[in-house]
Length: 288
Ligand code: DGL
Image (cartoon, rainbow, N blue to C red; front, side):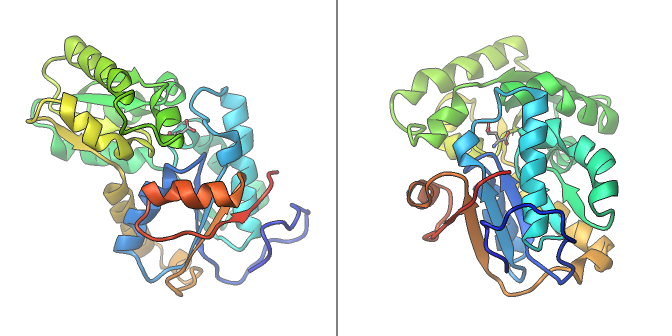
């Protein structure tokens, strides 16, 4: 595999089979990678966290698109034919443009998949009251991507969305389980159930948020289902690969995971321990 420091020159992209690329603004995508590897351990994975520029959730549409495209191109150049945007903010703000505008000129045979669609698909089977709550970054909420996807797939569901701008910084800084996090978690939970007391299913529409589950369980009514995305993204990827054997043969099967970060690797290696149950030795990458 080429070194992550190789510059994005305009030479042809590698054609040999390669790992599945997994991208997130930071550590959150590791929650998706963990579940994807649990279901599909046979493939190789290349994770890229843009930790140095996280969080994305409060950034403009243009910046999230630009940063995400840079990461996707880097993963292509490092041999990935398939990239998962394991980040709702990037999926909401950049996926469509990358699929429709960039892929046709970069390489129409490569694929970029997001995490919003698999989550929107599954929610219809989970809610009985048809009242669903969504916690996500301000960028994801403002994009209305979940409203659009859910109303298209399940027009009878009423969705109430709340941005939680403090949750990603709490997680990225390892403060999410401390007593200081209580206020920032309790407040949006209260507000959501004030806005719609009939909510029986809560979507965590940010890949960082599963780390807050123990805290959320303290404040969310016991009978409410809290949905983390990882397992649904994993089963959706498995189904995609069954439907697309042409893509499946372009994935290497060594069972490995390699980690790239725009932060200092020593910082990433320590912080990623909260997200994965394996030690990580990451490599530094600069974007673009
Ligand atoms: N993990 C990302 C998501 O799923 C957001 C984190 C960020 O704000 O950078 O939305």
